[in-house]
Image (cartoon, rainbow, N blue to C red; front, side, top):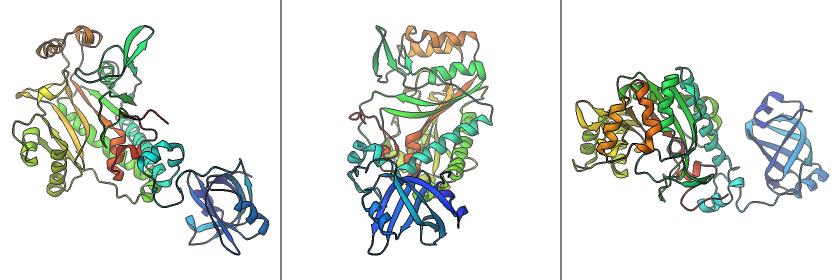
Length: 428
């Protein structure tokens, strides 16, 4: 008999089926027992009245893996509106050792460190699993949206000979006796691949050896990168990013509707045109000094509130960041060279995306490195490619975990990361 998932049971009313999953909860009453079985798609209620089956269920702790054969019958109070009656129950392994917290409760009451220490079982909780399903759907939407716009997915090295962006910290390692580093981003490679495919994207891990110990930073996270050629300026990049976000959220609604419902979310709408303010105006709105070189988290929160109150938008572009705060490959604003053709996208008052137009002329790269006192040699392979003809181009990078955390209202990015890596954690 083919196994049936819980989500498909409503179509099998009146038939005998086989399900399998984990014992989510047992309720042992005087004359009846209720066994709740969890699988990848939800919960199934099993009604046990036979004394022998009841005795078997009593010996099966929560999280034991079982198989149940029974008849599907309608019950509006049961999960999905159906339950199994007249069951036989067979364990598919030894009785499980219960985890150090109750997975059947609506919310995990264990502290976040305890959940992370026991991540293989904490992630089974419906709310933790729902966030990961939303992340998977968001990535699918990212890929699908860019595929329809003639982007090509690429896969670039995660071990590199030099740091990607000057001044950033990197994880060093030994590469057959030579120094090497974990890649901070695919930035250089995705730019070079514009010279091959014109439009490219990548989904992959990036590594930042910055000793942050905050609720918004990880030492390893998943970056959704895109780069496109033949742009007029950064505004072309912003338009593609807007469509990409809309596609991601549409796919979350389509693929992860159950997870959205589990978490009680209302997905935000993406305006047809996301409001944008120049960095200098953003400082004024946030009440920051006019000579502030960057936006602090408090400024971002103030801007998020302003965007919601003024434009009814959860999203806001801040453009024209000072060149001094942007990587050397950033294209300056031709009209205001001290400011860049770069941008950040704020989502509900938190920086989510960094992007912009890049330099594309070899001479400009030499001048930019010289102006910052940077030697060319560490970047020679990258810079040399621009001698051979590169179009005006730009791109962006979305931090997946940060996006999901903001979307689901998580207080800490680790809540939506399966096995986070940070300043203190290398296991599990």
